Length: 158
Image 1: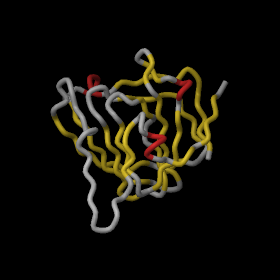
Image 2: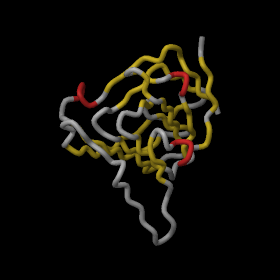
Image 3: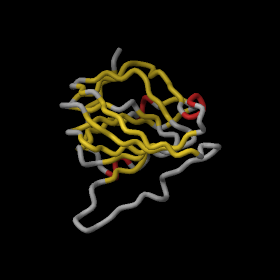
Image 4: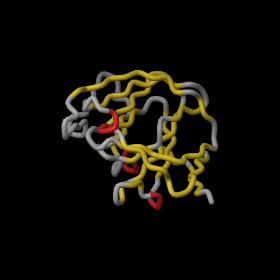
């Protein structure tokens, strides 16, 4: 059986349990994240990486999620039309599939996942997308990320 979720527009209020939505500041204004860019338990090495995500089309099927228990993770779009975020709270060390939320993100919005938030890997829509990603690492990948298979596939539709 496949669970079907309809993408909802990303808003700060809807996303608050999972992280921060960073909308572009107004002209002449600035914005800084300080309280929620976090690292603990040996994740002392900052990692700023750049990636190009291939283009995906809807519907998407998700079968697994990842989380970072020692670091927040911030995705900043550099050149993308739209992208998808699928998140879940933690229950007993696994994503809570009954509380999954799926969002469509505008190309001018950044997302900062709170430490420990389960999320699906990056998916750009419409065309390839370029991103900057900020997190902290221990230098040992198995300590920095954890993966879990969802109990059933999840189809994300527009």
